[in-house]
Amino acid sequence: MPIQNPTWWKEMSVYQIWPRSFADGNNDGIGDLHGVLEKLDYIKSLGVDAIWFSPLYPSPNADYGYDCADYKNIHPEYGDLDLFKQVLDGAHARGIKIILDLVINHTSDHHEWFVKSKEGPESEYHDYYFWRKGKKPGGKKPPNNWLSVFEGGAWEYNKDLDKWYMHVFAKGQPDLNMANPKVREEVKNILRFWLEMGVDGFREDVITYISKREGLPNGFPLMPVGRGMEHWTSLPLVKDYLKEFKEVLDEYGAFTVGEAPMMTPALAKEYITDEAGNLLDLMFHFKHMEADCFLIDWIGLPFSLKKLKKAFSTWQREMHGVGWNANYIENHDHPRIINRYGSLNYRVQSGKMLAAMYILQSGTPFVYQGQEIGMTNITLDRLDQFKDVITFNNYNLVKKLGVSEQRFVKVANRRSRENARTPVQWTGEKNGGFCDVDPWFPVNPNYPEINVETAEADPDSLLHWYRALLNFRKENPVVIYGSYRKHYKSSRSLYVYSQELDGKKMLVICKFGDKPVQFSAPQGFDLTQAKQVFGNYAAPETQTNGFVTKPWECRVYMWD
Ligand code: GLC
Ligand code: CA
Image (cartoon, rainbow, N blue to C red; front, side, top):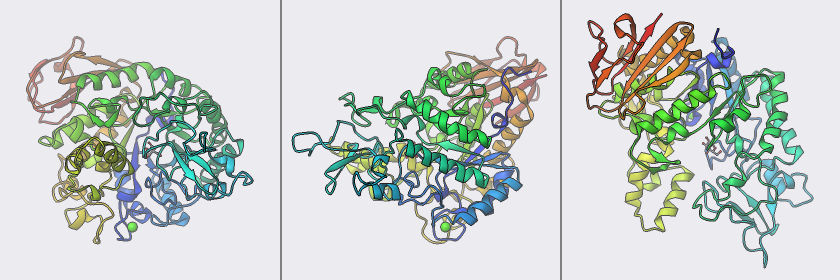
């Protein structure tokens, strides 16, 4: 018996859709739900069990849906509620669950609540947000020294009210005051609205940010962005709020995964326990996304395999039997993984290795659109081709330090999350088959080579590899529930781990880089007695317990 309670959401794997760039069903250059409907069979064919939709709600797109203007509707660019229901039914008919993004740390400044809150203290919506008088004298200085993580200061002045509103993210994303019980009732209504319709769960956006320190005190002064963070990250009341929401979620048996920047395993255990009464089922932490940067993607460092192994191994060890891991290597907030941790020269080999590396660990794996065909970063020439508020904010910051636009664009091409937001490449035709008209954001010019159609036709493609991995995982409890052990701890180019369960063993060997090294099987793992179940090169005719690695080689062995 696994020591970790079997549960459906532990066994599932999830496909993430960032709707604007997934599939354009009505050929206006913007992805939509018509496109999703057409691709449901494709998604099913991957072997995933659920779709997580990044926000589908109406939004003025200050942050492409993460600024929500109406929680109970669908963005007209994507379709409408009827079309969404068709997608929901179509997914359910195929045994695929639907997980929506729940963005409740903030709304859009176009949301009706915010518009009404601007009418002043008489409005019942005024206290839905953080409206404060400026600092004395004159009130012309913001109420505290907080800086947003997306767009300058964390406060915006409103002349009519002579007050400031707070936004941890962009100006168009005013923070909701979750301490107001009316706001929490609204959240519960939103949950009920979608759960009644049949939605299966939520990915909760920056959920550890939803409580702000009483009195909104000044933050640690030296932080250049996100100053004040210690007053809005993982405060004790977050748990009280989640407990309230959980009562509604439990009525429907809904699944939750919370996004949690700077999360540590110790703190995570306060939210995700393996028992009834947990506050969240899963959490997205960021530690393994910091193997080539300092805290955020934009502060780049050379890739360190040791850091990567440590992050994965720590979370595996800490969650085993007490919580559960959400395993991912890509999403809409990070550049493509092959560019970061793999190699463009060995795109398919390194992509396969990275896929096996994380999908075969204990946990619930997430695959981001385009990851399954090995899409890569795009190279743009000019700043005005970019679209993301973070990119512009960072430019404004470094411009002051004398960094030229040209130099900045070079960095953005490697570090911006927009790399993950180019339209999905479906075919080798114009615009990768995404649309005929000009797409809302450039298609990566490598689409003639990298696209779904080509990958379907090639039995050795990454796409088929992803399918095989996801199916293999589903058929082998040792992958899902096994206990993880790291080998070759101090190697700078080998990541080797095993999973064991009820006498079954699996060994995953991942070679980072193209320089050959000698691999010898760890004690207790006799490769001559094992079955090789995966390999990104042809399997050797006879297995030996030592071999010299090929570039970005990956092998997986099983023992019964
Ligand atoms: C989360 C989302 C990100 C968004 C931010 C603000 O980090 O994943 O895309 O910009 O929250 O909502
Ligand atoms: Ca469209």
